[in-house]
Length: 208
Image 1: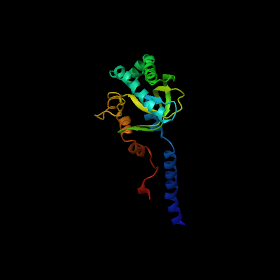
Image 2: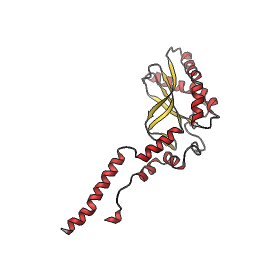
Image 3: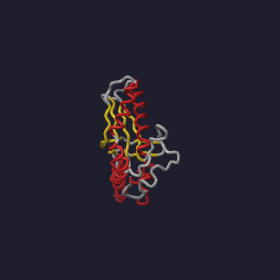
Image 4: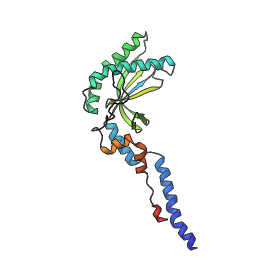
């Protein structure tokens, strides 16, 4: 009987801990959600959506992307915050659309193109050494034609999109330093390690 009591003393917290770990793994923790909101407030993303998934339309999407970035790079190069980047982008939406439309016209396409700032849900995405968590972000959305194809994502602020026409990561690897808090910066640099820190068991192995 005493043996059964001793087993119960550690079996119950063990099961509770396993259940807690399972539930924690089912979705982001409250702290992770708070960090995502902080990160999204300091980021402006780019979302280019192709007309369809045909090879030609996907290649056209890349050319439109390049035209849009060539237009935005001089406009956003001096922006010192996500808010300033949003304001400048919003003020030049017509110019962005014109750049995308020019690409289409040069190819003999009469497809429409629409550019707008919007709040959108993004899955987790890794850009070189940075991993942005899933969640809502503000983005410049550029939709080509029917907008039924796969999309292309990047970050307009901080300027990971830019180097000439396209940049996927800054050479110095410090794009987010000074933009995010130390904890948020650590989260996008080492997401797995940070998640483990937030997943805890309500017992210690020393209890067994």
